[in-house]
Image (cartoon, rainbow, N blue to C red):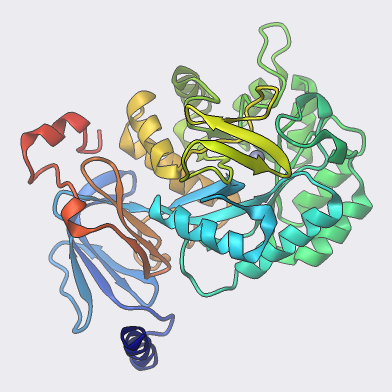
Length: 428
Ligand SMILES: [Zn+2]
């Protein structure tokens, strides 16, 4: 109790004295800093919520805390644009749950995310979206809520995946307008099936409002997707999952998305939803600049295997795969750092590509790359530090240290025994 009070006093004193945006200054000393897609031995100074400087031999200001980063990777924080829950909590359950999920996500290197509103009765979707909007402006205790991703309800029931079929609707411009009026700038992404009647006007409206339109849960043909991209679609939601597959005589929307540089492809990188070779194939075809790692994680993320729910449906998690009773996959239990490891190691694309797909690309898709998604002076200090076992040791969100691993647990590959080299660090 006393300790807490003391800490509060100290922090608020500092706020008033030196920091405009709040928070302590930190000097990350001697790490491998990921700058412009490569690792550079460097220091990184965090001040007033921003990256103040990156370079050799930076000096700590009077009260800055120095963190020894020798042997560690200093990386941009991850941005997860598709997430339904964690720690037994569901985004749809409101503010408390969103905050708990945000705290968990920070422990896994995520510094920003768009809580994803599952297709449900419209009233419930609206309520949950407003809760996520409120969460955007709360004091930081975990990852920053960057806005809301609305998954449906205007999707194709034939590719519903784990979306409750009874709540799926045809596009309705009136409903969308109601949503947007309430959400304002908080609306960031809408997943929609472009082949549905009425989709064109909805997509054009969303595009006009600067909202990312993502094709998903869809049976869209190649030709229709070519049109939809011109209407404003710029992303594919969980590419390959819950959509018409690629066929050599009917290429489908995936081929159209791969072919057009305006479009990003996000992928669930748990290696259960999509085989690692297909991710590698996608990265090669689409380019590393346009692929995005997502989790599509549900409440079971960070929890033991067992029974959970997703949007009111019963889900069983076994072997890292959450499934509905009929066996259909229902989201994942993936975390962003595990997705990064999967891409770097199992898909063989290496750390620089994985980090780009987890930080820069989603920031560019959301139109926030000016402030987030990479390490550069003047940008938000959204930083995660990764050790020799590719685990997150520290996470900073807008300059606030929101997660820190115990110092004795941290593995430093260049300094500790040679066995850690087997883990293939060094940013290959
Ligand atoms: Zn989802």
